[in-house]
Every structure is written in C-alpha cells, then in structure tokens.
Length: 189
Image (cartoon, rainbow, N blue to C red; front, side, top):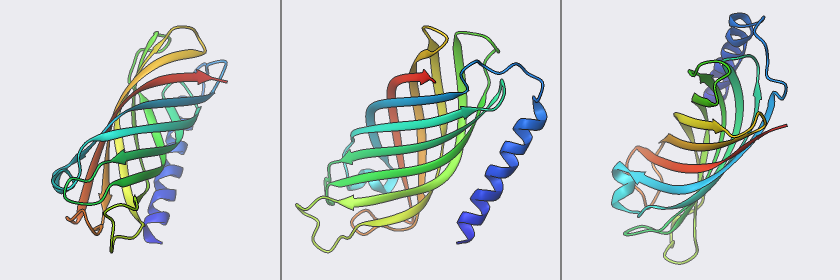
C-alpha cells in the first residue's frame, strides 16, 4: 500500500512540473500515441543463473503534455526459458513519465522514461512444481530512441531496465533484474 502512495505522489509531481515548465510551448498536433515493440528479454544477476534470455513484446499508450514531458502506461510480456528454474512468463505493468532530451522539432527523439509498477512471474506448467504465480513491486527506466518517418509515425529502438523487489521461488535473490531490448513502431493519434 505504501508503494502505491509513493508512486501516485511521484506521478502527480512529475505531471505538475511538466505543465509548469513548458506551459506555453507548442504541442504536437497529435498528443496521444501508441507504441508496440518486440525483442529480446535478458535476465540479469541472480535471475541469469536460473533462466536464459527470451523473447518479449510491449505496448505503450502515451500522452505528450508539452515539448518535453510524456506520461506512458506500459504493458510488457516476456517469455524466459528456465535453465535451473521453471520457464516463466513475465507480465509487467508500469506508469511512467518520460522526458524528451532531443532538440524540439527534430526527426530524432530520445526519451528517458522512468516509473513504477509491478511484474507478475507466472511459471509455465512444465518444471514448475511448488512455484506459484506471484506479483512484485518494480521500477522501470531506460532510453527510447525514435526516428520519425512522418509527423505521425516513428520507428523506435528501446533499452529498458526493470528492477523487481522481492524474492520469487525458483529464481532466488532479493532483487531481480530484467533488461528488455526491443524495436517497434510508434503511431501518434
């Protein structure tokens, strides 16, 4: 419950700063966006001792408040093959703020998203005796590189890092790192 309060407070602070910082900046004609991507998911640290890299997909729904600040809602789904542990499906749910560090109006955008949410570890049936599905609090941050081929469509390459807090049976460690590297398409609505 405490994590939810901190997350809500941080989101409100980021959104307020975004409005105040650039209230008079010209907004893009299409402030809403949808982003879909797919690529490799890498377990890191203790998780790498029990699982091999796998494949994953992600989807973002976002809103651009001004020339620098975005709010993003993200859903991730990754499949990691167990080496010593069970095969896992990882579902991630995040609310993020993203800051655009690129030059306004450029075709190339670089966003730095950061946020909080949760990751669900859902073992597949084979080799998962005694391991149950569990959801843990997580932080998510990284870089999103976007190249706009038109004012409404961009190609993206993303490197994110997810830090999950709490031990998960069959994985070990008090914190779990997952690093998705993805490529996709972003469309402004």
